[in-house]
Length: 455
Image 1 (cartoon, rainbow, N blue to C red):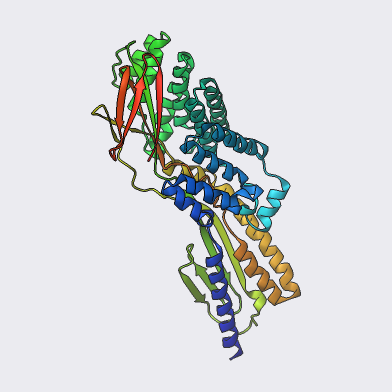
Image 2: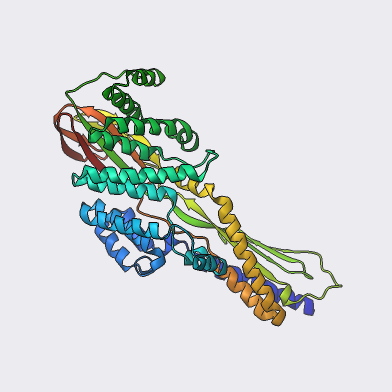
């Protein structure tokens, strides 16, 4: 009878533990939901208000870089380019200052969870920072500083290349970054560097971007590479590109250049995948809980009468790993009209696919850290259990509740970026968006005009 009563007590403890864990394990997105809701509805003023009221972002030093990144993005969307530049620079400085883990970060990660440490941006987030900063400088007509941001972007690209020497199937290059560099170099008349950037972009699109993200090279990039090759007298290379891509380019000196960056949807956000195990010896109790906490499966192994079970036999073990969850599955139409003529905006950067891939690339590192943390916590629990079995169980439960994956990320990025990159006659023109809104713009001969659209 005592054995049955003990089983009931233990089962109740398990259920209570898992219920607490289900309620406590909230993602960073859920913790900043009010801000995200305003942003997703394109209420940028309200989003800024909510951002400034979110203590988790603005008042917590470990998350300050995310505050700066989100705030700078919102300022850019509102057309406040100067202040956006300031806050992106602040974010960039924090990233540089925290490029390596400190002893304190390691200790906090093992003792509690990674959410307690200073946030370190994903590789693609650092690329996007310099992309947005270059857009800011373009918007105020400072192309020299835009090129500086391109060079910084290139430095980040080189770090990615150096990080994984095997050049396998993972996020080691950013084709869109090279493409943007090419456009900006061409804008200031540096066709030599433009050609190199365009060629690099084509190599990455034709390789990893096609195989990993189903994102082939935009037709406009192929044309741009041929155009730049002709401009620097590389006729043989131009002919080779024309043959490879089945494209004939007719050189024209009477047109201008239009580049439209179209940001569509909302980027994926990090959530967590949780693995919960609770076991006991003697009674042979094993409970598995699914990663969303909705499924509890208690399993009672055969009773062993020769072993007297105790509370100290019960172990609650939890391990959490981050994962990306898509916010925007269905993207807007890619058809745009300029003066009544339809142009298809080509996919240039698909963050819906790049973000999960970047996380997948370091899966084993994340798993190793999680296992070390679980091991460290269990060691503490075992030591306490030797002194007091109920205290040991309490420590085990507390450690399970505090186990969290690092679900932080830059949340004002788009799901993808499309591009329209064309040569067009000088004069006044009208761009019609898929939803019917008209945008007027002008083109000058031999110059590049930029438009940025947020859907």
